[in-house]
Image (cartoon, rainbow, N blue to C red; front, side):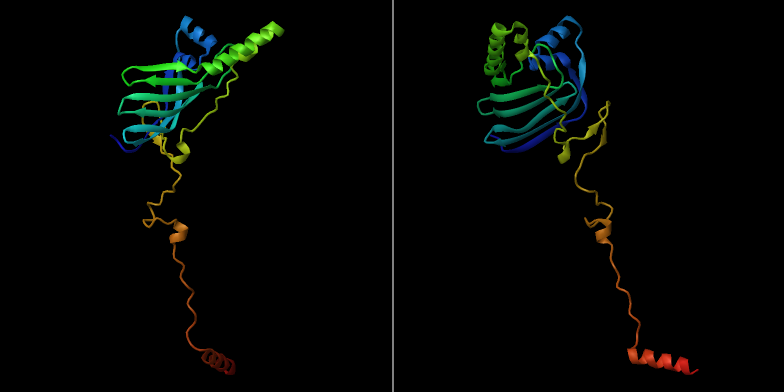
Length: 219
């Protein structure tokens, strides 16, 4: 059994464009890359956060962000019986004239995982296309058009988990929301740690000061 939590982060990299199009069930662009040579797209970031309890790893956050597609994940992996129950939501960032995008289900075991799309959304798209074909045949393609709803995501960088990494894999900048107070040594900001000294009052009583003033006037 295993208990605890873990997080993993990835900076910039590259990923097969064909893999992303197949994951999004983009028929048009998948055929294009199958006929022509596959390309790679930049990976902006990736982040995963899991919690383990009694050997069951539950995904709290899972995101893969590329310039072409963003993928979100949820579910769990049971190490006791080595089974998987993970759902991936693929959101392309570009439009396509023919796509059957649907969430992907990863089931089976760790040794033999099975990946299949959810049939419900696909059935609805095809039913809508068939209905429109009987009314206005050119409109039958409307339900199959991919609108590209994907948006850029920081993959948890706002919480300080994802560093900026150059092409050589070197960390160039650490994202952190906490201020750097190492220089102060006390954990306070320079303004807060600076001491304010009270202004010293002149010594002597008012009567002594008054007599001294009278004496100077008499002279």
